[in-house]
Image 1: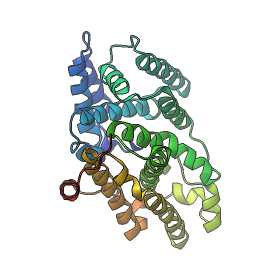
Image 2: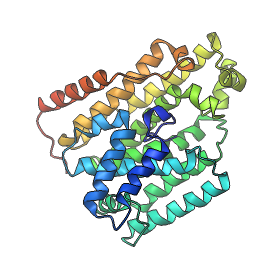
Image 3: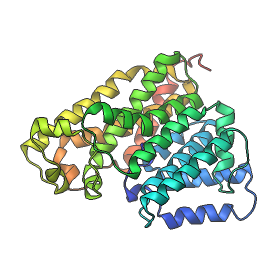
Length: 323
């Protein structure tokens, strides 16, 4: 479950729809324009939280982010799609994905899937390095056979692989100043988003046998795995959620300087995406047991308002000299 995908089918097209998108473009050699169109359509269908923020970007950054999202979405499908494949088959599929990724990054021929030309153009244009995608695939490998996270440090590493890396790739597309310090901020913002996802999807993940919260945290407040699997609330559950909400908020706080470090034309997107995710966290904090009853979300109107406010807030400021 990565930041670019989440675990809910309500935010992604069915596998058949994605296959249809791919088939419509993959009948012959796929050119860059067709590939960019495929990535745009996939993002629009699957990325309900990201799409409205990414739309605020100018070209070619917008199309690059659509291609990045499509890559993450398709990689996540290999590990998470419930289509009857065995874990062993998924491992083989993920290894094949790794080989194709490395070939695309090296400018070598890959499969005729319509995503690859846009991905190759993205990585070449913005100098994205293989180590980023090695980490992404390592995160997907963890989801093939879900691990038990005893301590937060293990969960944090997982969040880095499936979300922090997305932050690093994104700021390379957007443009930024501040070197390694800004890269650390981008990682922390990605971790904040992923922790928000984990809390929002707690019920759905538990129903699928996945509990991402550290077992150490559960023991401290006296919540059992069975409590989460059965959707049992109560004071102990509220204590647990309070701890996890505070931790997620701390990652938003520690990455607060990120907006001022990215290129002026990309700030509305970052602000909008952050406000959407913080809005989700605030809704969870207002009623933590709601995550046991339903999937917490923001309305389309709320997302559009956030995008409008983000654009207006940036237009009032002077552009920063970031390349």
